Image (tube, rainbow, N blue to C red; front, side):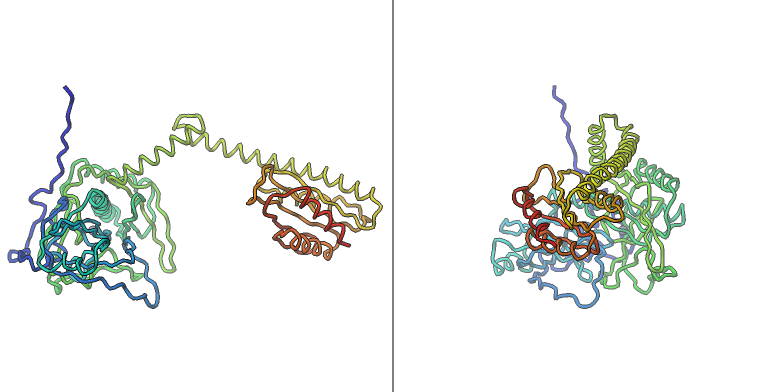
Length: 503
Ligand SMILES: [Zn+2]
């Protein structure tokens, strides 16, 4: 009999949301928008869709060009298309509006006529979640009609939207866990954190770097709590702004952690609690348990230097992002091992060996080039002695696939100058070098050297004018690059003519 596996979708436990103010009620009037803090996505983070009602809908006014200093965006936000967009406020939603360092969800709203509309982003305006709905294949008038106040709609996270959210929740809950352990075990406050674009590691910013031992200890402790499957829940109470403590600031003036945003007008205070580990005001969506999270901290910190402070970034991965990272790094390692024909554990040694061999080979090539340059320069000097002309002129063209052919031409010119007898007559040499396989985009390097700066400049100018060689020089040296196929019968002949005409 074939085995079957039935995968049940995870559900949020009923005690996840705990309302601690006795008088507090979640608005039930469908014409009232539930404030950010107790939206469906925040009450039940695993819920994928909800039937709800449109409270309001307006056409999105594109923002006017920002004036003055550009501020760095704190949270990753999508770039909206230029087409028409509606700003829709619903009674309730499963689509999380960006906040608390967590980027926006993307999702779908289905209107009563069965049409599905893309929600490109959701943002908090004051205390309310605003959905940015893309209007594509309908005119603005009928779009506004579909979202008329009081209309019944379904807000949902599609598969891509849910995967995105699940990743954000995994990283956000991990950040709370990590920051709590850093704070309580090492007295390291989290200055800020970044939920980077998938699948990059996220990071927390700390006042100092950490030792590998500290990092490992925090990771081990975090994963013990993950294995235990510590529960996470949310406590909500009515917000009394007068009771709020100001956020602690460092000497540098930077805030430690986050308080409630100043423009938040929802009237709800929301605390996210990891049982026995952490209590933190936060509006983000969090997994109901640490179970299956796994936390991997990249075993190094990046130091950041600013004018008034030195801080460090500690990178971490968890959940689906950790699996993506492990899969990718395993592939890099397997590919490298295969290229080196060795087992994965031998890769570091083999790579060091290859680098060492390469350094030695480069040194050997350089030594050989210097030696060869001596021979070529001696040939040039015997030509100079043998030819009776008052001005010795010569062009040598080489074929060389080295990435630094000009370096070798330079060796030749230097050796030539160094080996010249003191009474040598005036001279002008042009050296050029092309790759063995040439193309229209390929380049040929050209070097001019001579006893008279004026002659060198005249030859350089002629190479520019006649062959379009791009280059320049100073004193007795001029060098440049010719782009295209270098033919002996054309470019070679042109160089000979330039030499003939230079006197
Ligand atoms: Zn948070």
